[in-house]
Image (cartoon, rainbow, N blue to C red):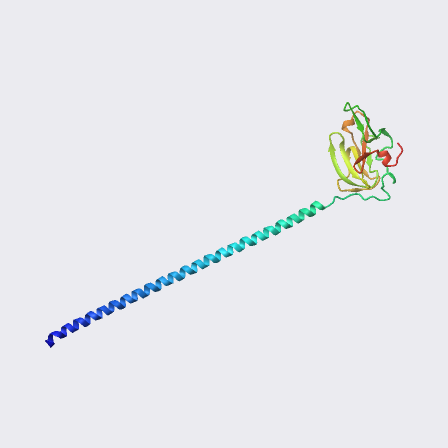
Length: 235
């Protein structure tokens, strides 16, 4: 009986060894599987963190850009405000260019062919009646036209009725229009002195049937005035 039990004991030991090995192998498999899952979780968490960081960086960039655009807009608005408030240059009044009180030269010849009137008179060229708020100084075509006093040239332009016109601020709110020129020697923004040549005499389209002359208008504080009176001349 003792001899038969020995083989059975060997078989049991072998079986236990196999079972132990299986248990160990299973444990190793479970262990490594768990480690692999943990690594993947760690990597995933790291990836999420990086994406969040990227989003934060993008938000900061958008905010910075908006701030820069706002600053540029404010600067442009300030520049425009400065340009808008800039006053146009004017001719300052002084003892030598006070309307009605100082010395003025005639713009061409002293003689006039038509004086200032606010009443309606016949215009032979246009065939109608209208006020003549100017003095037509006699002059030959091509003769010199001069500044009646010191002044600032406001504009030089062509008008369908008045021809080439030079507008000058002579100070003291007195603005004169020299109408019907041919050539012009000055430009807008120029300062001129009394007696300085402005150009040569041409023609006045809406008074073309009259003899050659300079159509000379003056406004004081925006209202028409008689040029002869404002210059202190005797007609």
